[in-house]
Length: 237
Image (cartoon, rainbow, N blue to C red; front, side, top):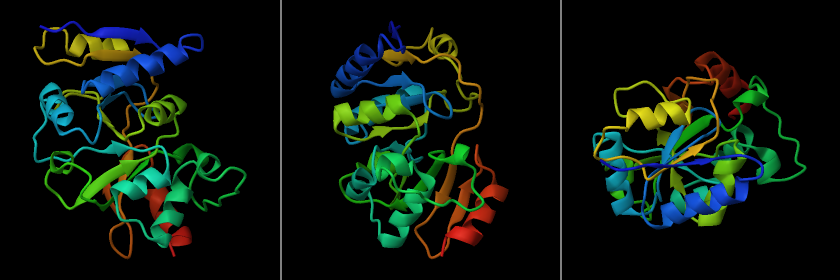
């Protein structure tokens, strides 16, 4: 049974939390992190052995792909095929202030609280290990509207996985305490839990397939189908 380290994420401890998390990720370990939706399981998304370890910890079917967090459209472009139309769509649903400072992006029909909470399915490039996509041609990418995750990716210099921090079949995790209890008696467990406090939410991100001419909602989540349908009608042209 593995002992999982817990580190508090706070203002005075922020830099240490980033450095500690990065060190574990560089060693190919899996860590639990807070996000803008629910707690997630993160590892180096380009490290095949790290992903294999994460799948054992999550007890997840290898045929199911894993969502990946990026910190910019530039990073997303290195992982997936993104044309100008898709890039403009990503700028609307991800944080435009981070992607292009000072640019006023219009999001007709989409509330600002939805920014960053939409995962997109795109055709994957060969740089992504097949185990990360479940052998599929597509990859699910998201740029969370959450400073810690974005800073961690920047420090690591590589994308990280963004799958939910629950063992497959269990409910989503909303706190570090829940995460610690879940793996307390497990042989395969995360190496580190970053305690960012309780997240008052139990909905994952919404997943949208934009590989075709029109978006298709693959999974409803924190952003509702009604919101997205309204947004698509007015903005995806």
